[in-house]
Length: 162
Image (cartoon, rainbow, N blue to C red; front, side, top):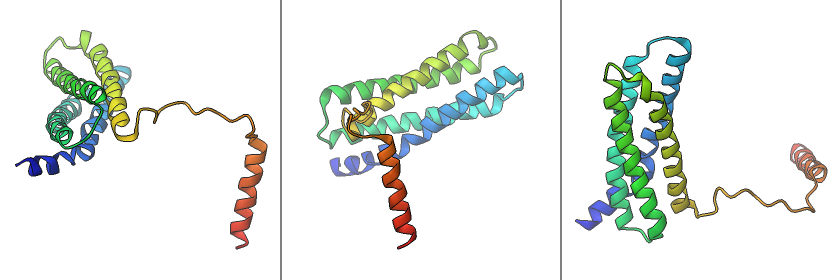
């Protein structure tokens, strides 16, 4: 049984991008609705429902994936609880959007959910790519932009003349 769960868990990195993209797109629709005074109720609800269902599915697959890996417990724990929280906030947004007086808290709560999603993604990326994958690069003082551009031009000319 563990082998099947381990296999299914490997689909977490694939599936997780569906709710992420849907949630960002839905947030854009909410902002467009606010600024252009158009009604996007149906696409917003569909986006929230789609992202919520796939977020729950991804949480389950993420749990399965965590069982078979050798991950840092501290980072994995943060990522897991942030992911679950993001999925739950997504569900709250869906519920809130169905209420008649949702406007007052909806956009601030949605913005918070987007921030939460981004932090969750950062910890997920740290698990996958290492803790320093988003570290700002340290520039070597010896590298000069002019010399780099000169080398790139030389490579381009070398390739063009084969």
